[in-house]
Length: 292
Ligand code: ADP
Ligand code: ZN
Image 1: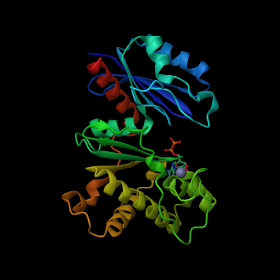
Image 2: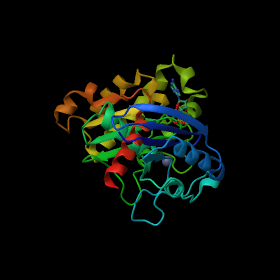
Image 3: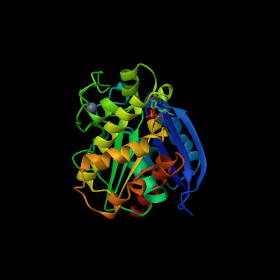
Image 4: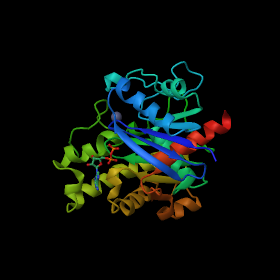
């Protein structure tokens, strides 16, 4: 059986793993995300030592995911200046001489859920992470959606609650989903981290209103067969029933499908025990090997 390398490249840490074709994680390690010149050689050496046959990388964005583009696998414009335009995928291709699959961190999380988790086998899936930022990975016909770049669906513009005068936590947009509903937005609005606001129902009512606006928009635009909500903020499971009922209210009976009749099974928590990202990287590496 092939040994599949998986690299989940985040803004604060890099998680490396070896898995098999059935999604078993055999070994795992992590290092802090420092400048690429410092941390990339360590990761290349780790995968070389672990004798992987192929690799799947899920990288923080924005990044180029178009194999036909000369910047394929490079990080694009980013506030992390050391990483700006860094040819991330090429470093592993040149260092390891194996197939390397490459996509965004949220797209691989979507792939992990669609392969092993809450949306297993469905082929049309939106995975949303609500954490330090908001990101959405989109799968259509079993493939992760790309295009001009890749969806940046955490930045859809949504309606602000008229009473909500708090500053947006997105430096680009006053009224985007991430700016109003990511973890830092909750903290900016209420003056404390989300975890310390459990006793105040107003916090979760407003948060679920924004989440429902985002989810309703994804439903009408992407027509997913399941929507998975993950990330730190969704540890607050009391959000799920609030979001479902507000989505039903916002869509107002317009979409009539079996899924919309059963929102408890349609808008769901992640199903991979927090491993959707690394499992998605394993699946990406497996697909890269099959296509090589
Ligand atoms: P990241 O997005 O950086 O990968 P997380 O998904 O853990 O990391 O998101 C971090 C954000 O989620 C922080 O803004 C934090 O306030 C919020 N958060 C983390 N844990 C919880 C929790 N149990 N309840 C509510 N919010 C949480
Ligand atoms: Zn924004």
